[in-house]
Image 1 (cartoon, rainbow, N blue to C red):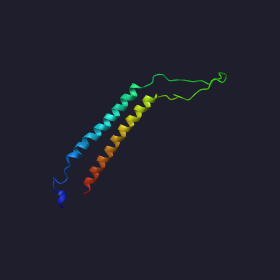
Image 2: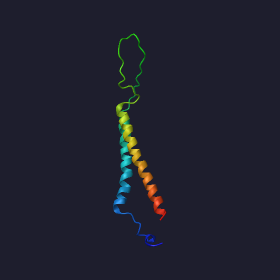
Image 3: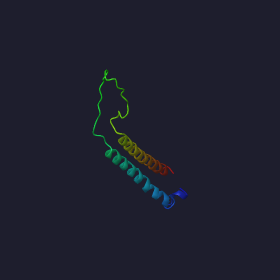
Image 4: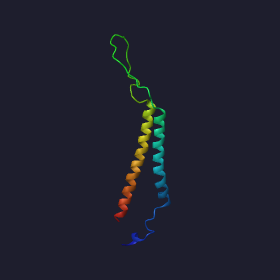
Amino acid sequence: MGENSTPDGNRPSKRAKVTAAVVPLLGVAIAVVGCIVAWSNRNSNVGWFAYAPLSNEVFSGNGIAFMSQGTQIGIAIMVAGLLVLAFWAGYSVGRRASSGLR
């Protein structure tokens, strides 16, 4: 089969080995930090409002969310970490599949 049939011909470089270890750990770390941020900023109080036509007050829409802004930021960080892990999983499966075709 030529030059690629030697066992030493397809050995990954040291940089590839380090990247293969660092990227998944970084994704897990980002996801864990996001979980911690979301958990520490969770809001146990759920606000309710009612229609009051005769109160002569203007109701503003600030903070009408079931999650606090800190919880939303934590969830966004966690999703970013999960996206890193999903990208890395797809990349490594694709590399493994393409190396088998040669």
